[in-house]
Length: 133
Image (spheres, rainbow, N blue to C red):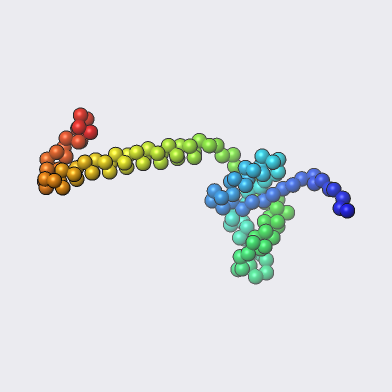
């Protein structure tokens, strides 16, 4: 039978990799785990101190991250709000609407040209006005 042990401190180091690490960081922070973000360049430099440093494997990366944690490297996770992703979603929505309007205008100009070649150039200026657009 194994004896139960409680850790006084559980510190987790995560290599920042674009945005892929953020859900894991948020989950761990919500679970009251101390999380430290590590720069990928620092992890690479720590891996470079190991034998056969040019070989990149998960085990070597874990050893490099553990070495950095022992040295006290890293920074607390950055606080990120939902404002930036929300704003990006609104910008993408607006961009799609503007593109759809532009394509619709192109189709409206092209249809008369199919029936009566050259007619689209005559009525093109109407759609650029406030009353025609």
